[in-house]
Image (cartoon, rainbow, N blue to C red; front, side, top):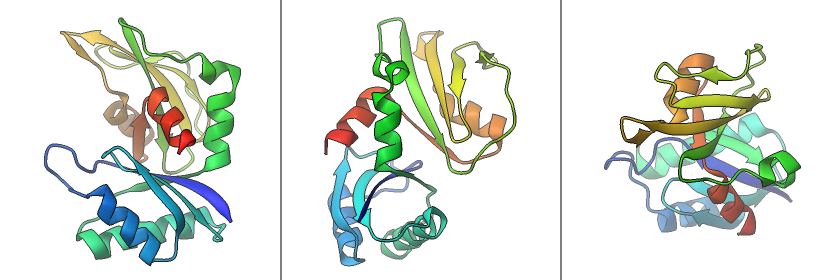
Length: 177
């Protein structure tokens, strides 16, 4: 069995694409996934499966959501070991939100191999991309007109790839499940 983390994009936001985590856990268990656990309402699912192909597993979960909940949402899937290795590296271990700034990790649905010159700033300079690999970007969010910038829309526009963003504390909690 392989452990996975599925990140659902854009659910339970402003009354849109509502999914109760209890219902999602049951749906995934009914569909044969094992060890299903969820963390907070933003769509973080830890589970186990024998299936090894990420693309077909992603499609399977997206179809499950469409069948059970009646709408499509992007699923960004990672192996548990990949996220654990990332978060346990010296670089990521030191990412802690502070009063002036917030750190975010954005996971891309598809690889984005193009080179980017870093650091890269959003138009309002409220988001700074400070690290990237082909499937994830790390950003710093700063206050702009009293609101912290949120990198997801900026990164999706930049890469043309569906993405979902989590803070390091959320990722650490998911790994503890």
